[in-house]
Amino acid sequence: MNTNQHHADPDCIFCKIIAGQIPCHKIHEDDHTLAFLDIGPISRGHILIIPKHHAATLAELPAEAAAACGAVMPKLAAAVQQATECPASNVLQNNGQLSGQAVFHVHFHIIPRYENGSGLNFQWPAGSLSDNDAAELKQTIISYL
Image (cartoon, rainbow, N blue to C red; front, top):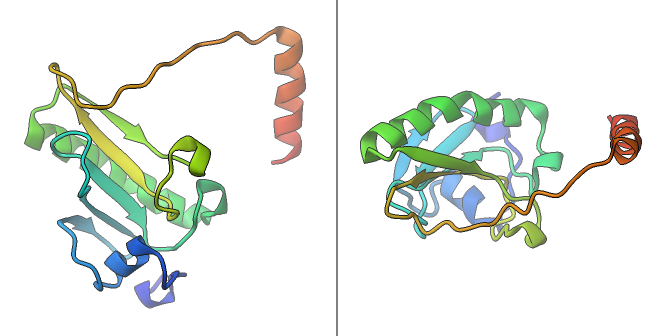
């Protein structure tokens, strides 16, 4: 796919970065993706990976664009970890305002984690799932595939 054929939103800040209208600290670029340092990092080395195809949420992103992001993630996560010497990292992707999404262009965060904290704090209040609820939910989700 030619980069000129990617769907873009002229009002989207990430589309403007892809088009070169707004500068970024580029880490990686190929025909389908762009990765750059987050200008509001949670921790040192925090990067964003974006598809060059504009879609507000992951559910709206064509499979090929999602696959292109996934294909570069391992290499970029390893490079960030080696460069920052962080012992761990999070890969985070938010969908919709309630999830914390602030820029409505799909993007994946690679956030280095350090022993002394990294500024990313979240609770994981694990619940429970009954067999009956699991069976019903499974069938409902499958019906939408």
